[in-house]
Amino acid sequence: MRSAKAKVAGAPARWKCARLLIGAAVSLNFVQAVPSAAQASAVEFTVSGTSTIRGWTCTVQGAAEVTPGAATPAPGFDAGVQAATLTVPVNGFDCPEEEMREHLLEALRVDEFANITFRLEGYEMSGRQAQATGSLTILDATEPVTFPVSLSPSGGSVTIAGELRLDMTTYGVEPPVVMLGLLRVRPQITIQFEGLVSP
Image (cartoon, rainbow, N blue to C red):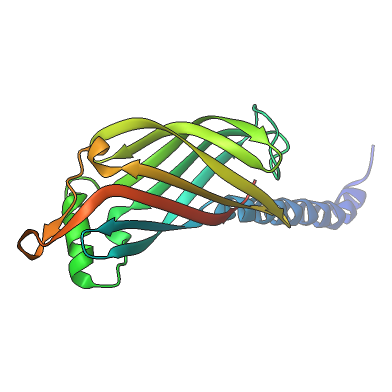
């Protein structure tokens, strides 16, 4: 049995060990928190189309949420992609002319539907390109879509890029008609996107 003096002498050593353990735990939590913050990946979207007078292009910054695991391996995602969601905030669109932006937001009924959303349901790989299949929601309509997505590993992240063509009227979007009907926006549009995501 140790004396009380020996117990007191051993206390500083125990406190030092406890401080080291607490410090290590705090450091580990900080390091683990960094990747979580990086999961909110920005994606640049470009939407373009034509009208009876001229072509038009608007841009918007959206977001990608990717959950790795339990699927076919893909470049930068060794365990595959279990789930992925692309979200576009309708109010974030930027167009060359303010009037064009107003007509776009009106057509997309921004007061009722804040976002355009794509949810991945599956994919097939061919080299660094995936054929992605999922559901696209615009307004209150959700339709199945399939389009190519390229994946390019870059350091600890992956650059994704893709393109999708669709008809706005399929989703209940009425193409704008302005200038007393002289300018009519055609329903076919092209959506392109590119962004850097973290596995």
